[in-house]
Image 1 (cartoon, rainbow, N blue to C red):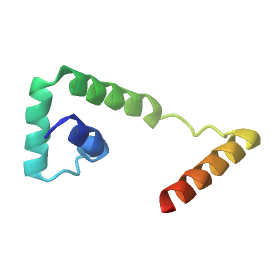
Image 2 (cartoon, helix red, strand yellow):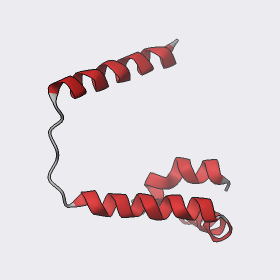
Image 3 (cartoon, rainbow, N blue to C red):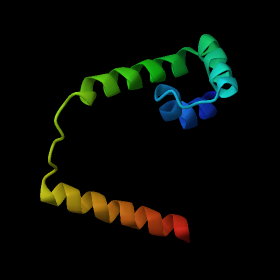
Image 4 (cartoon, rainbow, N blue to C red):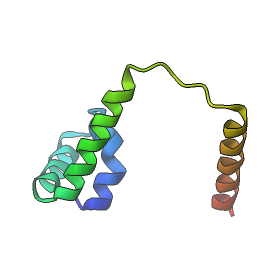
Length: 79
């Protein structure tokens, strides 16, 4: 596995959803890649930090801009 593979699988890895073989490949890569190890550690700490927090209500203008941006991105990908 390479750095791109780690990034693609980070959520599955942290959620414990990787099959044994992919997990072994990912962990082998982490043993030799400080950058990916840092990304995994920082992501894990971020999830732990916000996991027990109450959801924050986005202001309506921020929510509207987010939805508009997501719709635009989805349309660009569809083309």
